[in-house]
Length: 353
Image 1 (cartoon, one colour):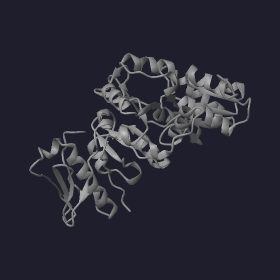
Image 2 (cartoon, one colour):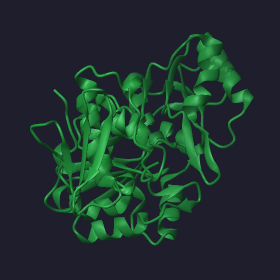
Image 3 (cartoon, one colour):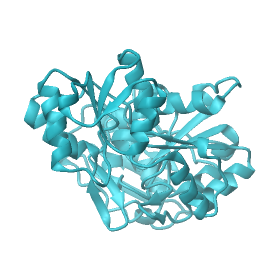
Image 4 (cartoon, one colour):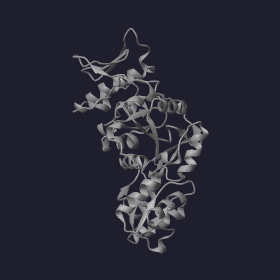
């Protein structure tokens, strides 16, 4: 059965108690803030929503990330930042015994987390590690990749913090950890046996536990993951049974949203984090298979043509997010009925282009 976009009568910040925010492409791009992110977060917090900042980036200490966010005018504690290094070390401890030697291809933050979880970080294959954990960090070198390969060939188990193929930076998209993994995979013929970062749901599950402290852990239906990537942020939410919000400030573009397979489909769409504080319109379907959202309609006709139309209250469909919402529902239904997605001429939306 097709799962469609949902709507909310009130702001999501009033409907959910905790937002699990991705960082790269959602709150910042490298050193630069994302437009309207701080504004949306501040408004959501005044409505009672708590923030957790979850990132697949394992290279920086939480206090460094928190300082950057405070530089954008946000108010937060260091403990609200959950990195994939934190989650990865907890993951490894479940796989390995206390005192296990781990070859760390990553930053000092990841090494510290390994120590906190009662394992021993080492720096080369000659140290005979039981496992290798690979993460992205700015100083990653050929020597790092070679040591990882040597250790894995020698019998070490292989793990990673995340599989992001790209990383949003100030200048555009850069190779992410997933791209760097390919060098080791090709050299050794071995795939990582587990990953801490999204699209695994462990990032969200661990964040709920870590932020609860001595209090009761929030239920999944009280938490809203928010991200810019369908294949990590949204898939992780779907794997874990969470609702999710996709913002159009980072990786995801409209064509990918409209053609997304079920595992990548978000619960809500928003242009940016201000979407946390505005009711989400509910798409609905008429008997003739026309989808409505706000002042916009969308339909896939019998010949596979996508037809957009603005109602009296609607503006140009190609620049209206409600048209994207209606169109997404129409196309997801068409796809799940076995329609030929490759033959479609997708609308050239300006919003989320």
